[in-house]
Image (cartoon, rainbow, N blue to C red; front, side, top):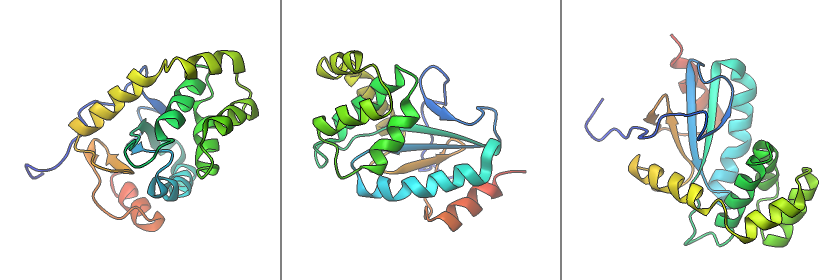
Length: 179
């Protein structure tokens, strides 16, 4: 491993991360993403298929990294996802946001919250008070410490993945880590 290899500075933690699959899985894939980023949106169905194909062999983690300077709705979308997480619906909101990536204004976020069955009053209060802004800022800071510069950025078993993330290439690389 070279000196400039970027490592994940904050390991996967149950009380910190949004996780699908067993933490003890032989493969961990951490994605730093932005709900409004077209590249992260392009990666969404690829990651979904990888999760389907690898099943319990994969621990997938999504961390917020909104690029607020270029994506005006990214911060609110991330806050909506975190508000959904407080009601155990992070992945429902995550999927909904990526499936409606071109419509992430506040009115739509409220509509998505209703669609996935959130307590709307609680959601509205948390969004209006920016309850999760510090959580998102923490994720951004940790991403920057790990060398994240754009989205999506993937870490495979704690090391930044620099290769292509098309389905075939990424899946082959993930499978190659299983010994």
